[in-house]
Image (tube, rainbow over all chains, first blue to last red; front, side, top):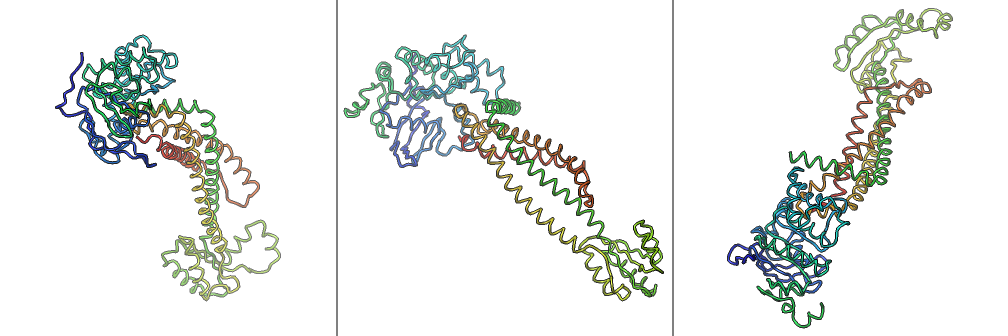
Amino acid sequence: MVITPDFDSRPVISFQHVWKTYSNGTDALNDICLTVPEGDFVFLVGPSGAGKSSLVRLLIREEKPTRGRLFVHGRELTHLRRRHLPRFRRTIGLVFQDFKLLPRMTVHENVAFALRTLGESRRSTGRQASAALNTVGLAGMERQYPDELSGGEQQRVAIARALVHRPRLFIADEPTGNLDPATAWEIMEIFLRINAAGVTVVMATHNREIVDLMRRRVVAIERGQIIRDDRSGKYHEALPAPALRAY
Amino acid sequence: MKLCRHLLFALISAWQNFWRNLGVSVGAVVSIALILVLAGTSLLLGHALGQVLDTYRQRVSVLTISVADGTPLSSVYDFQGQLEARPDVVEVHFLTKEEELSRFAADPRNRQLIEQVEGNPIPAKIEVSVGHLDDVRQIDALARQWRGADRTDPTDYQGDFIANMLRLSTWITIGGLGMLAILTVASIVIVMNTIRTAAYHRRREIEVMKLVGASEWFVRGPFVVEGVMTGVIAASLALGLLLAAYRPLVDRLQTELFFLPLSYDPRFVDVLAKDLLIGGAALGALGSYVGVRRFVRL
């Protein structure tokens, strides 16, 4: 089931003329205006260094915009105090290309760890972690360690860890970057299921097959600017001819 | 309940981390223990010096005025009354020539001398006890102006010696505080670097904690606990070494430097233990807090 995004409702993400210049003078983002409604599935595409990761870093408030306003869940991130950051980050599910799993912890412990940081009881974290692992199809692998798993399985653990907070927004930075095409598809199916449950998904990716086949919203970024925003786009269309050669 | 779980997590993580980086942890414990031994030694020396000074202070707070032979008793009593009226004087005691002679003769070392002299060459004395050491000089000046005072040797007290000792004590205190400040900074730097190494080893875990929404204190807690743990273990080690050395050293000094009024003070052991353990814990907490601040910033 595909949920149609409600473009008239209050957006989950709203970039309003956002600029980002790093301290070394690099202009990462220039005048970004982007609105993502609840339930949307957005692919961020563009060549390396285009500004996709900067955009993700702004969304999770690892960085602050140099200029402009950025709202997530109606909260302006520019003015978000540091002590409110943990609570804000618990509303977002984050998945990365390198999985970011803790090698000394089992699969179950990795997922439960996200809840333990909130001070939840061991019994409660255990139950919720098991449910999240079940959702990503890893039931029965709880006692294994990350280095005993394949890349796809490790990414599933990372997704389960992101899911365990029951976030309303999922941000994934190149989640299929380290995976073979078949495994990448399995991971995308999980993301589709998450989106079908009404969760907004923003995914930065270089995987053109997936973008072309899924026909979801595509936001193309180049040299820190949005050059195209298609509601049902393809990877190639998002790029002007000279940039294509960079891929 | 949540706080308890966070504390438990911090304790377990700190303990695990201490053992995982055992080499670095032991290095830090030994370095800080040595620094605390130095600090504890300076505290012990300061205490011993204080003991010596206190004894001397009690001794010199009594000023003895020699009364010139032939001074009328009425003049002595007048002066005694004058002294007793002063607020800085605690007690005044008059000893006649005979009393002084019998006190002198009571000392076996003076027996031979007494047998050789004729009559009573010992002058009568007025012993004045003062409340504060600083007041002795004023009484001394007053006694020297009194006509009844023996001109050849009017008063007797070790004022200059004590003044010099007090000056020395002040300088030793200043020097000790300076040394303590340097040692404190050195300890903080050692803890800071140890905890930074630990934080570097656990940077991935820290990154994950930040991403899943852990608060800064949740991330920082285990490192601060580890710092406190390092400080307390080092302080216990230093305390053990100091206590093992304290009594034998005092016994030895009592034999070698018998003229110094030194003694083993069990009450100071409690003070030393408290100071070292609290100091060690505080150094550990401060060093780790500063050391890990940059790593845990969200």
